[in-house]
Length: 561
Image (cartoon, rainbow, N blue to C red; front, side, top):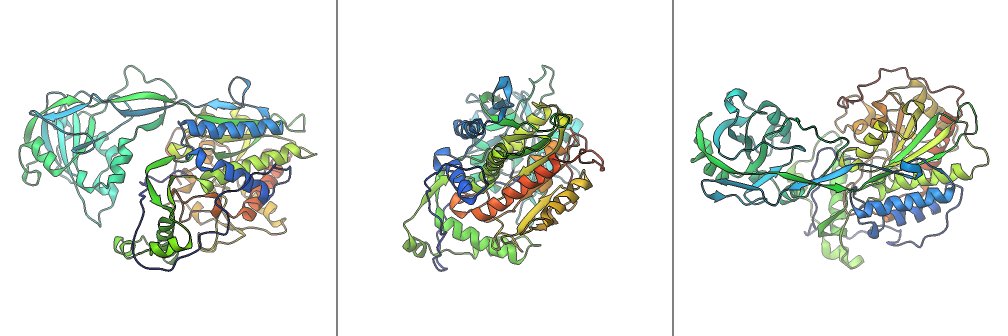
């Protein structure tokens, strides 16, 4: 699942209390076995240990490792005998991702003093061409977002130095809202926000890495440029203004800024995998039930963490979160958590880890969709409508693969009657979610476009020998987690296609190097897979399309939960 605008902070946590705990009864490695037509825990275990193995290096979209992962998916659907439905008669739909990184020739200086990138200034990439600022005059713009700041007209052509509210009780959005600031001061030559001291090293490292974006169409020659946007320290602000920022007057002129900060683009190969099971009804086979998951994760880190101490620390954090679900943890609560690393290492040797394996996110969904595809391919009776299986790339980077597929579908968009999305479907234990257990399943979006689809899913569930207990709390309008907007189903929903998002929820290993196949509940994963298979069959065999009885969103507007 895509992160909700948060930085993932990693590192070995070494401290002093708590008893050593066995981490899992499952092995670190698992010998693969040939899969069968039926949906089974053993098949899913074989697939997931392969798909989230260290050799996949975290499957980051735009990397060779994501290409390796998608090659595995394509080889499997070819083995099943499914029809290729990608580009040029193959299983792959190429997605035009690019990486944008700081141009090595970028320079930012004030009266002969040059700022060191990533140390004395941190540039942010707006995703488009930035405006020239050489020779612009620095001007103090005030503290964001207070009244009395410099006006947009007075900021035109100037290099603004803007203070930021900081402190433990100030939400990040009130400290720095880059989008709003760029919108207000679009005519400025540049913006320097005095906030560098507030950023942890992990955040700076994140900014330093080239960012991957979807470049669906070339930028027009007349595309409006944006101001250069950088973060500086208090000392850097003093250099820009020629005096302390705390005593500067709004609109006061500073020194002349020189240089050029630019970003360069390089291709980042990425691809969806698309395959079709043809329907059995001549009149309905031209319509499709889409089943999907995302094939990517977030790659690897260059700084290994101690696996066991990190997991023990996150376990303690999770317990506190579950004990008080309506309250955010205070920093002092987190600081009170200590882990006895020596005790952990007496259970087994230290395990240094730097790969985000993404077993649950979304290796579980990817392998479930593969297992469902094999079950459909081997079934004696095929569903009336066709099934289109799509493994989307770039979900973690911004739902890029599903956005591209729904903007450029390889089947007629209007022929897709529903989309069933599986993202993080291998956990949901009691220590993962309040009320968790073998029958716990979260449903999101099932009635947002079609009441009938939501009712049909409930009906299919009631017919099961072991029905699931559905948790709809994260589907609530305005829920702060915004799960409806954070996975691939939304890219279908924006076009008015009814969707159902199946997930077993968040857990301590979310976006951590500890999200590994040894912590997956394979019996439950098989039950969820079979359930989605049954739901897809029910939708595919209806004598009519599921009825859309709710307003369709603007396909090019912002998602609203």
